Length: 300
Ligand code: GLU
Image (cartoon, rainbow, N blue to C red; front, side, top):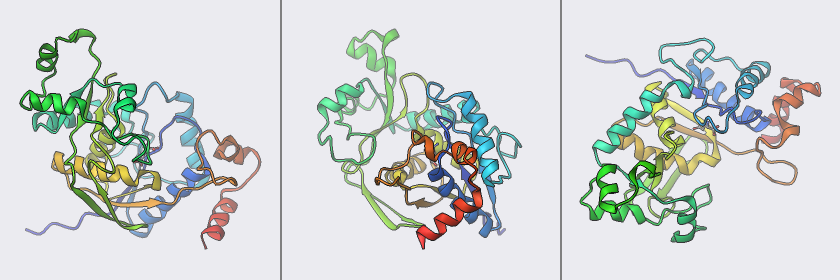
């Protein structure tokens, strides 16, 4: 029996933690163009997992701004689809199932280190250029001494820690020294060495929220995304995510990272750049067409 090749499925995955800015729009536009060129489907996923940081007003603004700019998605929180729900806050069961799988296979261990502990003990605090310092391995070694037992109650009783109050993250054990390679649709061949370029990373937070890395892999796999288009700040995270795909037994999608936009001072755009938010551009009477033409001019 032959099966048809999977048709293209792309996604826009904004986090409603502030107003979308023109840099998001540029990356999303690439995602939309690629889906169109392949005659594929574009999914809108509302990444509202982090309840502490997102605000409902930003969800409404996000949908409105995307529509104003000219984005059209075929599946999403507002229109449903075969892989609903499309808001991460409603998808906890997928993330729990993924964590369970990782736990059962021994890929993760409980980690009681605080951010401060890690900063104080990091082997090479400046070795990474993204958010996370290399994890020094404190709790990994503890878990290994205990014969790979990853059950928290075992760990807690062994350590005589006050288990009801114990705050711990689940951390993924990376294969130290292994080179993770992939060919990026924009930047070409990429290589990152586990344990050197990035260390053991959190997949589930102590406040019972899945970390970005796990949620995004569980969703991209469940929604059958065939190509992930996103900002270049996530290139290294792609290496982490490839390890998660492997551990979970999922086929990774293709990846295409877009160069990040900077302001006049060369600083990467962030949600705090209010003047460049789609909201403000719209209020100032800018048109989406003119903005898109300006990108085309600047990227040659
Ligand atoms: N919600 C994430 C962000 O806005 C998505 C990243 C991704 O596309 O994987 O950074």
